[in-house]
Amino acid sequence: MVHKKYGKTKFACYLGFVTQAISANFAPLLFMTFYRTYDITFADLALIPFTFFVTQLIVDLLCARFVDRVGYRKCIVAAQAASALGLLLLAFLPDRCPWPFDGIIISVIVYAIGSGLIEVLCSPIIEACPFDNKAGMMSLLHSFYCWGVVATIVISTVFFALFDTSNWRILSCLWALVPLYNVYNFATCPIEPVVKSGTGMTIGQLLKQRLFWLFIILMICAGASELSMAQWASAFAESSLGIDKTSGDLLGACGFAVFMGLSRIWYGRYGEKTDLSKFMIVSALLCLISYILAAFAAVPLMGLAGCMLCGFSVGIMWPGSISISSSHLPKGGTALFAFLALAGDLGGAAGPAIVGAVSHMTGEKIQSGLIAGMGFPVLLAVCVCLISKQKNASTSV
Image (cartoon, one colour):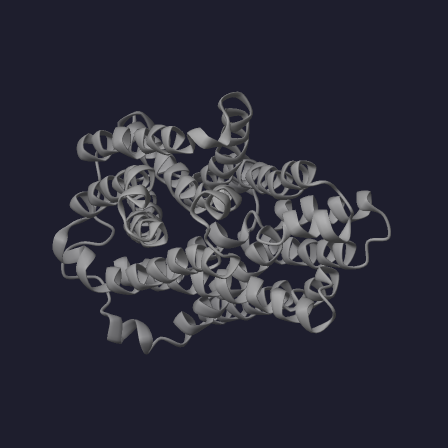
């Protein structure tokens, strides 16, 4: 009965993460189109993902203060509406601005606001539902971001092959239908409060908790471990392994996302019988091995194997970190989830930046940059061990 009652809630959250994947990955597929159509420089194009993630970071921070006052339903419906509006604006606004790049950036900011709200709200909405295997449900929820990435890349690639890249505005409008449909889902599905009114921890109380700061480091490492490889997978396959652009996208970026999704589905189905902390530590070790395989790849197959193994190994890191944190601080409420999302985004921004900087300093060698990324899974494993030690000490007392 529980699963049946909250089935619509699950489906809405799944589509929410698909919407986030569309928002994060559609515009980058159009970089060369923007370059040729609007004469936008590569330096300006780099500001598109930067603007997207900075907007998400700001939304993450603001959510800790205003979501509980406004209400979850209103905020998540607004998130879907903003995502749809941003994708629609992307189709029309650039051509109506004196400088098209301004129209693109405005559109990105609008749908990034929606994406940031989705990131903060969907996880606690699922956590608040009375499911038995909450860690498994969280992992399954986050797998839909992976499938959203794959769908965005594959469907967009097929659309451009059939109808030409010049029709990208039509595809942007079609992608907007996903969050538009999800407005209805979130407006009508059951949504439970994360904590009872007046019992949640304040921001000040959270900041005084020592464990909270350990959870922040854990989330930073989770985001960095995942996105250091994900953001560079396509370029790594093309430049370091000598694979053509299309194959690099499908085998590198898509391959990474597919294996990450499979990992999250597996844990969602069978994780109830597995100790989450031990699974996280094993995953961190596998992640380290995957970085070693990619960084020291002598042949393309070895590098691609490292890339896909990395996708599988990081699958549990982000949702697992959320589950561990919420189980240790069950009254953390919206503020906890907002700060966790903020930390994950910080890691997602810092990790790829470090890999890129080291690659540049070593003569544009991405494999050298990936060596620098090895520290993130190691630190994540250390954090999980410290949290487990703290939990065991509390249990003994």
